[in-house]
Length: 498
Image (cartoon, rainbow, N blue to C red; front, side):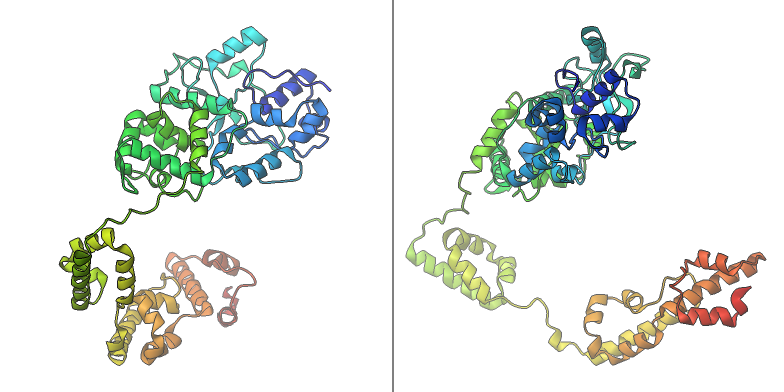
């Protein structure tokens, strides 16, 4: 079966689109039937599926298609090994959905571009060398906004990144170049990101460090740059360096800008429990590991996955007499203050720190036996509080009686108007007056529907209008089958509101 020869760094999406042009096929589904024996294959730009079917029909290796003509290498090093295997299998097989979800791109804060992108200067070179143009992989990576060959900013084409038509593979075309002036020159930060993306795409099969490896890698990175204090990382210092290398506009466009520093950046230096986008990793590598090969970084993180996790601070030695003396002082502080927190606040902070460094096990065990309750509800006069709150509820009910625009005055609505609503809700059994008020005056669904109808009728009366029943129901949000019996009785009493 005919299939075009691939060009350097060409997307599989582009190969299939060129195949349709070369064969002169107008029907996209006819092309799918020819290549995949299946007309339901979706035109996915970054993580296509059914690769084994395609490889078998064109005489290629499925693994070669996966590694060299998709964006799979951008995701594989940053997800756990088990998930990487599932993603690989979802792309190779024809009956396993969810490849984009397994990669994490659908829920990532870093979103894919809106359109397929291209470099006009590369198009000119391709046209002269090959007689046609094609989509390169490195142009379609999120955040890689510069052409790594010509150093100019990429342009958006009219072709959507995510399919507009489910089965259409649209080929690149030199007529996309509509620039009226000079192309934008890429900055050093944009060129660094694009260069790292090119390295990732050409890396091929590589080990997956997993959560443990990336956790240790970034802990060591922070220590190497003087931003680590014990097991704490001064993320603000590191973020200032990132801001000095990458513009606010680029960070904002790629979802990387937020608080100072943003939450994702802080989480990157903590224990990893979720995967991070390749762009989040690359952003840091371009700043803190400039010039280092991507393969070396990934292997370094993979090796760190086997390092032992550092234990907490080692206990410092202390003289037996000094240790016993400090213990007695701390026990006296606990007795005076009733608990460890108050003892630390009331002048015992230095003593606590000394014991933590020299006698942590004894300190933790002793503090656990002196824990005190944060509150004491045994002294609350619930009868007095009940009388106070029910008077407050009565006033709230009087003020709200004439306001027809209020939401449903349910039990929770009344409780929400009170101070400390959670405490009141938990102790209604000890407040019979409040409980009786709520049972009597909480608005039912039928009463709420009648109030909305009444409001609509009064508005019509003021404006001199007359609405039919169906118009009133639509304005009030009353759906068929969900009108309460009490509301039906009200409508009948009003003569059907005709």
